[in-house]
Image (cartoon, rainbow, N blue to C red; front, side, top):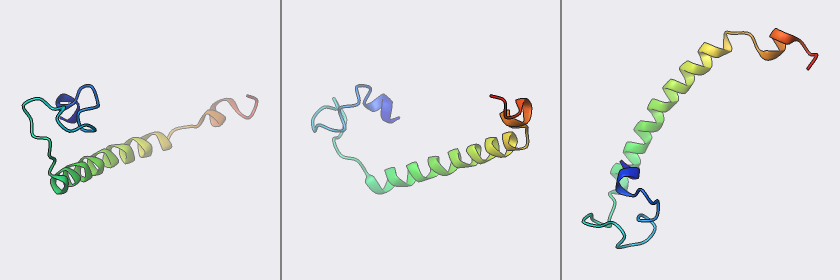
Length: 66
């Protein structure tokens, strides 16, 4: 949603750059949304790490010869 509102990456830095959109942000709600998204991403990351940590490492596969 942030990218769609500001594809150039500059509108949130400079007031008046967002056409037909308010220049203000609701920071408490934005912070809550980002916290929620971070928690969801952390769950996925934990799952992936647990899945791959059960497998062999590169050292297990080829030894210390590299």
